[in-house]
Length: 399
Image 1 (cartoon, rainbow, N blue to C red):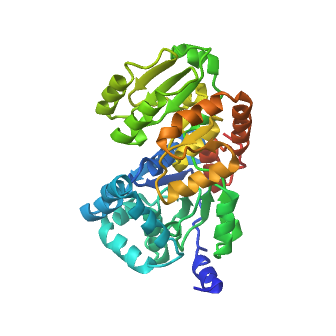
Image 2: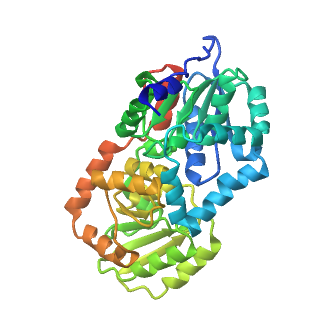
């Protein structure tokens, strides 16, 4: 497709609904529970909305609850199965489908046929502002606007560092993206510059609050003299997490290693068992799901995890250098390449060399300090506020 045709398709996003000045705006946030990042971004916007003037009500909807069983399985279960069991196949599909507008008509027609309950819900809700943190609802809202089935100010919040073609829609008021490169990409394929805002990815407002590192270490009974290595074990799956834990037993530098096991009780038990015979210079702790991720990141010196868009944004807001493990082919590999280029993360060639990478960084406190300083410059912890304030016409920075 020529750039002129792309420009014509993108520039159909002209109609916006003005909000009467004598009342607040009714906000609907649309996410999808296919991977936790989309939902967490929606939750971040929902939490921030409670502190932003001009919003009368907020509703956060998981659109897969309004989809047919077939579509819900396709977008949630099939995705999870592919990235865990056949990641190379997922990576191939991700690259193959990343062509603007390719297959769009068939995809939107299929989604529309399977999401009539969502369309009826949106008609009943009649939101003044709709914010989509997943591409599936953005397609639906765009279609409804195009066919005058709804009147709303439609915003799309991209939750990865790269704007995959699936995120592109015709009818919108504004795109919110995480990097200048993503904004440049959208402009190059014909999207109007005044409809693109670089805000970062929305994370929970707790990450924008100052935290007392020493007080938090006392709260969680963390020895002040030892560095803390935080491992997001729950994101890797049972087998991969245990392999990483066993590798870390070979570290030479003294450290406290905290494994976050999420809601996986079996993993929690296995991590405790695997670390019972840890050497004396390593202190292991296994934790179940915690809502206090912002506090654990604040007290840690290194974070071992996967490069999902939300995780990267939270780590940058916490100025927490990262060691990247097992990125999912496709979006996570692109995310990983971006932050490795920025010098705020490292990546072992194999999980076997994970302890080597951790020891290497712990031996170089000046390097860790430089990584922290760089993360502070890249961090955008108030992204959720900025998105809402931009849509409401407020000046960024007002809470």
